[in-house]
Image (cartoon, rainbow, N blue to C red; front, side, top):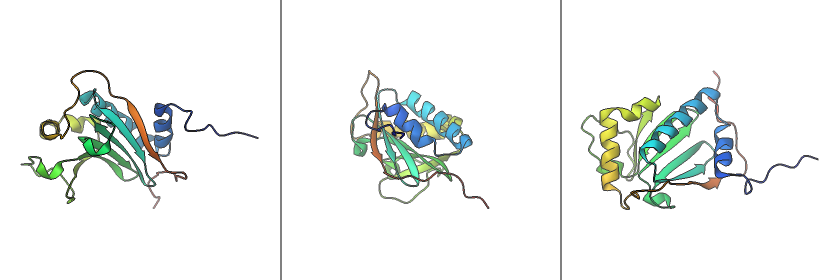
Length: 160
């Protein structure tokens, strides 16, 4: 009899890896590169990882609460996006932000380099300035697994 490893005994990084493993290898590479770029931009923020049926979300927050988050990466089989938690209040002269929610807006990310675009970087800087809770000035944020659905399907693009 094979015993499955209990997710409570695995490290948060191993749990996040298992979330990503359900994506196509090409999408995994994109998600990891975007995560590395956002992590580099937010070294003191906590990463809050949520595992949903159709996506994973990694929020970057000065606290351990998602509501205090500044940005979040969402990954679905259809693509990756960077969400701004105070999106409607951000300056967006080039109309890059998508969505119509009262709280968040997002930009699609097809490569990690998109985050370095001057207009996206300006929105990230504005989001940091408008954050309800300031980021810690020093230290390293930690990865916190916030949710994992009991049963998950692979997140692969549908075949045509």
